[in-house]
Length: 430
Ligand SMILES: *Cc1c(COP(=O)(O)O)cnc(C)c1O
Image 1 (cartoon, rainbow, N blue to C red):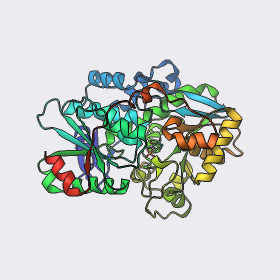
Image 2 (cartoon, rainbow, N blue to C red):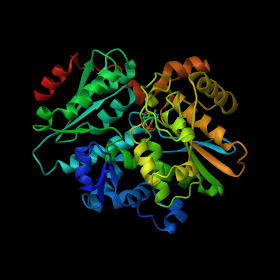
Image 3 (cartoon, rainbow, N blue to C red):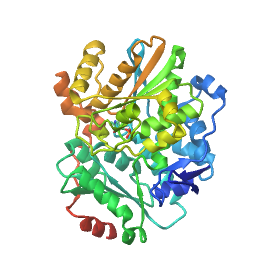
């Protein structure tokens, strides 16, 4: 399978090339040249398959030129060693919990898959790959953890000093080995701008192999389609139409769900829920795509004003707005509404939702009105303790911090402070 740049269909590369480069030289996102549906027996018999078997069948066609079946099975066994339960919240609503991984962020799966692939691809070269990533908090921990100890790969994480939670900072700065944390005197946007500048800086890119670990990278984006298949497996026996509501920021996760649909998974509709960063909901009602600067909210992993994967979603629907509207509804909600939903869910079902999951729930409720024969699944993308203050204050409860998270608190932070792009550059060269 080849991948092409969305800016130029003629520019085709291998999976390996797409993973190592991250983005095409013309700045286009890589996209699979074809998606072949799995046999219908796969979906009929899905309940008899293990998660690893499901994942193997689903992703094989995309990677098979560069990853042997044996290696792919090893990678999947290594990364899918935790649960993805669908918890019933209401009679026709379930929460797909994606936070049971090592850093309790749903990005663990994508980060681990990408780390394994990059590690595998660098086995037969001497050239080190540097993964450069800016984080506003949650992504960095998942990336750092996924890449820890991977040979031939160095990870440099930039985070805004004083603007991530204590737990998040510890998750980023205490791992050591091949993980380096840069504490930037500035905001998340400053971190991201430095990273973007580095990717365009030929003094760096001619001497170093740089790649990104966000969802523009196909190895981080595609494995997210597993979640939808696992949820389908858990919910198929309900015998109803299934719809998914996905709290969306860069729209990588929901886009992966649409790939699962093109693999033949019976799903009726997708709902994208956003916070007040409502570029996509606006597009879905007006047909005009107008990116804007991001606004800070309590669901900060979704504070994105120009979602990078939305071009992939449009491509999946052949850039046909009417076709897209048939398959996708998008709704935005503000922080007050989100908090009210968190409280409602807790009072009605005793379920503790984090602000991101609560947005997924809100989108689903809105869509499900007058649709009695439908079962809706919203994705709960972060463990509530990852957003401790807002959850505790909104629900008036005290949360126990899981041991897995507590374990980092006594470790010693190691970071390098930087303030300027030149300092990042000299760090990369040393
Ligand atoms: C990254 C993230 C999202 C958004 O996912 P996208 O694929 O960028 O749309 C939602 N919730 C949480 C907790 C996240 O970390």
